[in-house]
Image 1 (cartoon, helix red, strand yellow):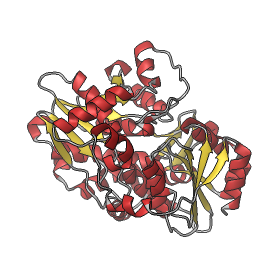
Image 2: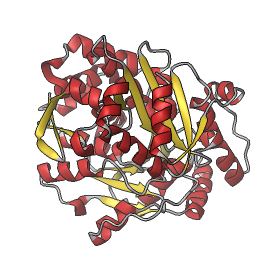
Image 3: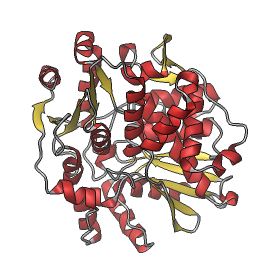
Image 4: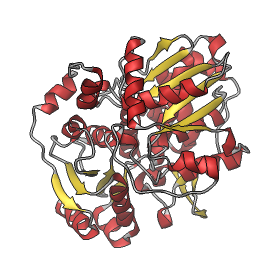
Length: 427
C-alpha cells in the first residue's frame, strides 16, 4: 500500500511508515494512492464482521502484511459488536458504543494498536501523542495500556470534557500519561502539530499520533459502515442516507471511503453542533473557523477539523461535488429537545447521536432509509442526559469502575515548552 502526503504528493510512504509517522512533512495527512474496488459487494455483505473487515483492510494494506496477520489484527481489535437498532419507521441507529470504552473510537484505537505492533521496529522507542475532545483519549489509552516500549501522552481541554469521559482514561497510570490543558481542543490539537514539526523532539522520543489523522484508525472505521448496511434488509439498502455526528471529521471521511469502494449509500449528512465551520463552508464556499464554543456535545467542539482535507481530496478523485454532501448544525436547546423526543420514541440517546438524528429527520425524503451514528453510550454524558431527561442512568461496569478511581492527570498551560518537558519526562 502506498500513501501520499496531501501537502506534498512527492512524499510517498508504505502503510507501515504511515502508521509509525502519523503525519507527513509540513503536517500533511497521508492518503491512499489507490482505492480498492470490490466487484461483488453483496457477497462481501454476506460475510461476518471480522471476515469482511479482514477483506476490506487487506485490500487497502496489500501485500505489506500477510492476510493471516491482518486477520489476527482484526480479530484482536474487533471483539465487540456494532448493532443497528430501529428507532422509528425507516430510521435506524448504528450503535458504536459496545467496546471497552463505550465509544466508536474503540474500533480505530484498537486496530491502530494492533497495526503499530505489527509494523514497529523492535529496537525503536515509541511515544504516542494525541489530543482528545473526549472519546479518543479513552480508546487510545485502553488500547495501548500495558504495551511494552510504548508511552502514551494524551492532551485534553481542562473542564471541557465530561467527568466520566475524563475518569475513563485519566485513572490508568503506567505507560499512560494524561495532561489537562488550560485551553480548547483546538489548542490541544495545535500543540500536537507543533510537536510533530519539531524534528529533533520527534526523533528523540519516537513521536507518533493516534488521532484520526493516523491512517490505521481511519481505515478501521470503514468497516463498521459495511457492518451497518449488512444488517439492513436488502430492500432498505438502495435509498440509504447516513447522518454522521462530526467534530474532527474522521468518521465522515471513513464513511465516504466506504462509499468510494462500493458500499451502497445514496448520500451522507455532516451533522455538527454550533461549531459549524464545515456547514458554513458548504453553504458559502468560505472557510472561516471561529473560536470554539463549549457545548453539551463536547466531543464535537472542534472549529478546525483536521480530516477535512481528506474529504476534499476524495471528492476530487471520485468527481463528487461537495454540494452532494448534506449538512446541518444544531444548538444545545435543539439537542436537548431532540433527546426528549427520542426518549418518547423509546430510544435513550446522548447529545452527539441526537444531533445526527435530528438533522437526518429534517432532510430524509419519502422512500429513503435513514441511519444515524450513535458514537457513545449515554452514560458517558450522564450529568447532561440525566438533567435533560430527569433520569438517573445506571453506569455500565467500565464507567462505574473508573469513576471510583483517582484522577492522575497533570495540568499544564497551552504552552509548547511545557509539553516538551512532559514528553521528555515520561521516557
